[in-house]
Length: 205
Image (cartoon, rainbow, N blue to C red; front, side, top):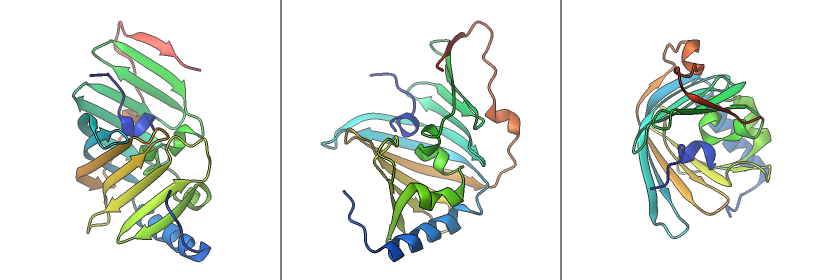
């Protein structure tokens, strides 16, 4: 099986109603995300091709904190770790003893995971949003965004419970969250990464 980083982070035709309806959906989504200055939990995700065939399954845990800090650890089927402090991103593969380091640009900030920890006030400017039966359908306004559409669902506690992301190749990533904690006390140190001794460092500028 091809080794990949969490598809949710890297792979990254709805018909919308009136502008007024879109504005209301953006405001509703903003109200749900605004109280969540930080989140942590577990995830299970499934990547499917255009025909619905499962290509890969993975699971792990994550922590996200505004502004733009993320720690996303995949445990199965391959151990990988992605860490960003909103300025620099580290992608560490312990099996390969390799870390890729790159700066965080505006396009990377539009990835689905970082949307949870980004600036809530930017949602309306960056996405067209529609609400249907408690789910929020987002389409990026920029053609160069790392995904084509996304659906976010929340549980009865107001916490994200699932996301579905469709990329430019028509592949779909379905993410299910569990064990979610709202506003946990997260140390800023967990959003920085020091490669272990002997790690091969690749700088992607």
